[in-house]
Amino acid sequence: MRIAWIGGTHPRHLHYIQTVHAAFPLCGALVEKRENLIPVAPAGTAEGDKRNFELHFARRAEAEEKYFGSPPLPDCDLHQAPPGELNGRDSVDFIHSVRPDLVLVFGSGLIKPPLAEHLPPDTINLHLGISPRYRGAATLFWPFYFLEPPYAGSTFHYIVSEPDAGDVIHQVVPGLEPGDGIHDVACKTVVASARAAVRLLEIYRDQGGWRMHRQRATGKNFLASDFKPEHLRVIYDLYQDCMVRAYLEGELASKTPKLFQQF
Image (cartoon, rainbow, N blue to C red):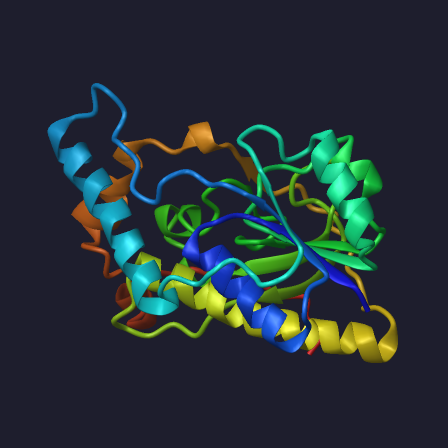
């Protein structure tokens, strides 16, 4: 079974694929350079919102260091796509050269033609969000903004042209503990998802495929532009990043997601 990966360069992406690579060595990796973990607040952001913005992304970087360290790129045939060139001809040529039977995707930009047309049928994305309720961008943030921390999880699904809308293979939610902040939950989701990926590949190897669930509900497809620094007031000003504790102590009436799982 020849497995390739298409992904990004943040610690969470590299932790995921290094976990997989240790159990199922990759035949190749197509890597897209991602943006800095700590961005600059938009011009004109109010002072209080700027403080929250800087705190939020500084804590994200600290959490990724705590949970993942600094994983290296996988030791396999490697192609690093320049910014804006993920879907270009060089990427297509690389995929042809490594000849994967199955491709895992996590952390890259949206896969489009011509690259999309040259991937094997079993091309599986790890989406950090419970689809279809939370699709698109920042989908481990929005469950907290909407006071639904148990909906912070992940979805393994087949790649289709519409973002995060392919048939679901497996969904993951991490165990929540009272001391968890928003970034702890995000990192724990990645850790649990990496372990789940290994188990899913074992099932694929032994059974030749998975059960699948068709996504019928539409949910919400969040865009990167939907996120504003003002949204962080809910996390830090209202809940002081203690929303998980509030949920576990019964202060929030959030339902729990109904998950589709292989095991």
